[in-house]
Image (tube, rainbow, N blue to C red):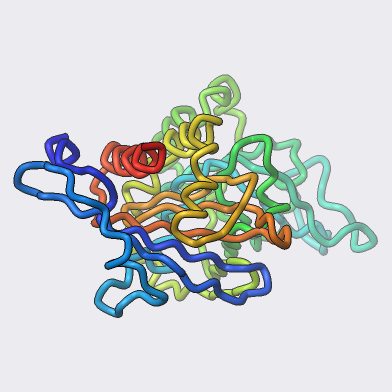
Length: 320
C-alpha cells in the first residue's frame, strides 16, 4: 500500500489499437505523469514535453509471452468448448450403452464443458450418459477452445478477442489422482459436489496449442508452454474484470482511449489484465470497427491489489 500512497498516476501509459484488418494504429500521444517519489508531491503534467509519435525502443512496454498468455488464460478460465470425435468405428466391449453415432452422423460433438487445471492439464468431469463420454472412450483425440473472459452479457465467440485451441489426447485420470481432482473440481465448481462421484474424469494431455488474436494465428511450442509460468495477476483477475466492467468504470474508458490514442470510441469491454498492463476492446465512432487498446502499467504490478490501485489512479486522474 505504501507504494500507492506515492503513486499519483501511471508513469507511462502507451495505448495501441489494433484494427480488425490487422493494420496497426500508432500511438499519437504518450504522456508521463511526473511525480516526486520521495515526497509524493504532484508535479505538473508536462504534456508538450512527452508527446511523440513513436515510443523510444528503451521505453517499449513489457508484456507476457504468448506461452504465458496461454497458460494464464487456461488457469483463469473454468470452462471452454470441448470437441470430441463422434465417429463410431469397430471396437470391442464399448463401456457405454449409448455409443457414439455411426459414420453417417456428425464427425464432431462440441459443447461447453467446465474444467479445472491439474498438473498443467485441463481436466473435465463427464457424466457416463453424456455424448463426450462415449466419444472419448472410443477416441481419445479432443480439443478445448478457451476464450477471453468477458461479462456474461457478451459472447466472446462473437467478438474479435484472443482465444486458444488446446488439442491432445483425453485420458481417464489415474486412481491415485482422482481424490485430489474431485476435491479441486468441487472447490472450483461447487454445484458439482453432489454429482462428483458420478463423473468420469478425463485429463487432456496437450499435443498442440494454437493462439488466435484478431486474425493472427500463433502456434505455441510445447517446450515453451511447459517452461512458461502463469501470470499471477492475470490468473487472479476474475474479480478485477468484473469490477472494472461495471458502469462507473466503463464510462471512463472512452476518455482513456481518447486521451492516449486520440480515438473516439464507445461500448468498451475490459477483457484482460496482467502484471504489465490491461486491454480494452472498444468500437470506433469513426468507422464502427472494433479495436484492441493496450495500456501498459508504469512498472510491474505484483498483485491484483496493486493492479487495481494503478487502474483506479489512472481513471481518477482523468476525472480530475
